[in-house]
Amino acid sequence: MGTATNKRFTRIETLKSIAPEHLLTFLGRFKDYFSGRGVALPQTADAKSVPYDGLVKVFLDPDDSTPTELSEALYLIDEMSTPEGMDDLLTEAGKNSIAITGREDPVTGREDPSPADVAVQVWLANPPILERRHDRKSIERSKSFDYYHSAAAPTKKLTKISADAIKALQKAMDEWFEDRKCGRGCRVTPHQRSDEVWFTVEHGDQVVRTPARDGLKPTVHFFRPEKSDIVVYDYRLGEIRVNARTPAIKDQYRKAFGKHLFGDEGFFLASGKYTLDPLFEDGADALSLEGVEGLDSAKLVEVQFDEGGSQGEVEVRKAHDLFEAWKDSKRSLDRDRAIAHVKFEVKFTGSRKTRKVTLRPPNRATFGRDADSVVIEAWLAKNKFTKPRSGNAAK
Image (cartoon, rainbow, N blue to C red; front, side, top):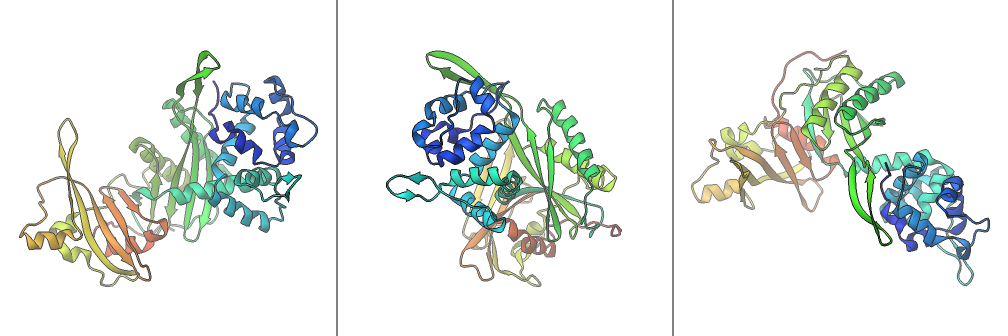
């Protein structure tokens, strides 16, 4: 079974943007593989000697012999070869005394490095840095989470997580993913962030078969893509929140993290965290800012009604302020209709622009920025959008 194609490395301009000495040093780690694919890597590090066409052909058609380390390196370099990634890696390179240089041009002299050139040099100097920054990038992209309460809050703070606990988590998830035809090889990496622990979970997905061409000959690329999920443990709220693709995966994370971090598969409850009852019971008063610091305004701007049926019909009502619109037309929110989600527009203190918050009971919330969650969660709890729970704080 082949591996996924890294699109950035199938373009000659990308390869040429990397200084030849860095490119050949990187590829030289896998010299036998390229030789076996019919590409001889030169000894001299100049642009004229680099077999760009041959390299592109190899990258266009990865096969079973592709080294796992090469595939992972290409993936990380590809993901971090952006202006934002370059800025992040340059900062890390400075902290770790990694010298970053560009390609040597006979006319203009030493040129500035490209994003791909920076990523390659950081990988050559210290691969774990690239892995950590990529994990951080994945974390910062994730804004939509499903939330699962524990029976009590706060719970214990996980300042230290044993290697055995991580191995047990990985084993449990491996077995689950393999049963779902996603293969083995799950990797769980914890990241301490203030009062939270963020876990990135990298794992395989169902295999993909993609029609392709090898010259005039039709062929098929057959590979297993990689997915990256996020699980966040917040001891202050006594809950985890999960960013993953399907309800089944999210529920498995709920069980596995409860069992292997707290000794109880049911530690985090399957019952929902959120309710929309305050909108029906209190109307516009459910958006009160009293006792909540950090917000200047909050409005209900969208309601999506779920009409059901075989075609999944929905009806969306929008306004700059729905409660004001309903007041003008002498209408109100209909409690007899099922609601799929609601959207609020909030303005944070000190911010010029408003941001959206989406609530999709029973468990899902989406924030414009992850940093918004602390203030928004306090506001939701104050106005009783968060269901109450009972229990004593865990030791």
